[in-house]
Length: 199
Image (cartoon, rainbow, N blue to C red; front, side, top):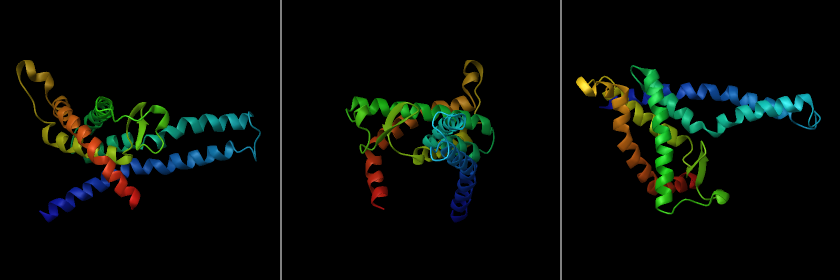
């Protein structure tokens, strides 16, 4: 049992490395663009300033959407086979989750006003307002997809159901799981976030 837990932790750690290795490149590139747009060194509106603004605007969204990068990266890293399908499924699951949470927050009247997100514990992810779970959202969904993918990606059906096997079956299973997770997170995550803030 202990060996199995250690093995799972090692697989998770290796899966985490994939997305993490890209972050220094993005970070250094953004730092460089900050220098190029610093009006102490360059004139505002000039060629160098414009180039810096262009690349800064192009790269900054990566740092603002780390959760989806970790979701896909962890799912691919932890998948034992058909890694590309695991990555694609994780992307679908991420989209389903953020929209499920947004709809539930709306239905329960917990959605903060869009112009008052600061300090509300909510944020927008890919244009959808949800609880601010940061990279933890990507990690949770990435692990969930990887576990279900590894267990059911080889499942095949016959006859009319043949097209619903493999990764499609994984996605079908993930839909109710994501629905439940989005509802549970709505009630549980604020307490976890407060604990993280206290630490």
